Amino acid sequence: MGNPGPSRTVGPSRTFIPSRTGGPSAWLLAALRKYGHSAAGFRTGRAALTIVAVWVCQFALAPVDAHAAAPPVAAAAADLLQSAQKCYATGDMGCVLRLLQGEPAPDAVGAVNAATVRDRALERWRLLAFACARLDRHDLARGYFVQWLQLDPSQQLDREATPPLIWRDYAAAWLQVHGGQLDLRPVVDTHPQLTAPTPQPKDWPKFVPPPRSGRDTARDFVLHMSACLALPTNVPTQLAKTTVDHLGLSIGLELEPLAWLRAGLLVHPVRWNDGARSRLRNDFGLQAHLRLWHVDGKRFELQVMAGGALETTVANGASSAVGAGLRYHHQPTNSALGWTVSVADRRSLGGGGDNAVLMSIGVALRPAAKGSVITR
Image (cartoon, rainbow, N blue to C red; front, side, top):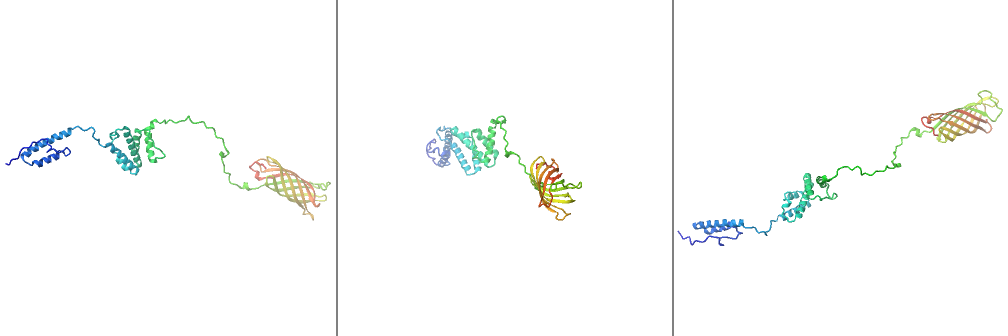
């Protein structure tokens, strides 16, 4: 057998132990390549394994340097919030949820300042609530708003600057957190005593007038019929030959275009005696009555007549005449039938007729007065 060569001391020599950064695996590979598979090499390799085990124990039990740099957990949390803010600004609400729903609790971020931990937690709840509200996940949004308000009850949103779908979730969460502090008792005794309003003409009820009827456009008319006595004045000694001389019937039909005026036709057949014989004379013409005074259906009028006379029993029996007088017309309330009394002086024109004083009394029919109070 060949000489294996001089034995070499196996120990923690720098020849066989690489730097700590190489690790025990690299040292073991280097030892195997150096010694091969010989018996001496095997013994040397076993010693090398022993040395590796001791080195690993020393490395595991070595004290950690207190001034060594801590893992950058706080920096990672801050980066997540910044990334979530950028996602929210671009409208990617799903990105906000993916970044912040799995973030560790605020007390595990490794920050040394408690205020920084609180601010990051507030921003996290706010971003999550806004993102869920915009995604129509309102239950989650209200829950995140509750967490946000419970962490800092003074947090508020501006209603004018907040979208309605976010404001509804915020308002529901605010009531859930602060609802117990609200006084929900109705206030009924603090209202001031209001004075009664003064009625104004504009406040009065307004009624639509009824449609116009035939009565609104119709003209009133009066039909009167009177027994008339004609007393001759041109022949004072003229006497009646019979009991019916100088008696006649006066019939008139008048319209009432104005409240103070009545005008119409008049027919007055009368048995006239001129001293020699009795004959029938027909007076006809126009008449008008001007109202002088009236009250409660009592009317006092001035009577004016213009017309003529026609006698068919004698030649040249036509004549003209005028007259004037007074008439009293009484119209009972709620009745169409009244009565009249009149006195008039009739004068013949041209000297061919007879002059007379006409006295009459009779009835007057005014249909428009039925069912209404006479005011004219």
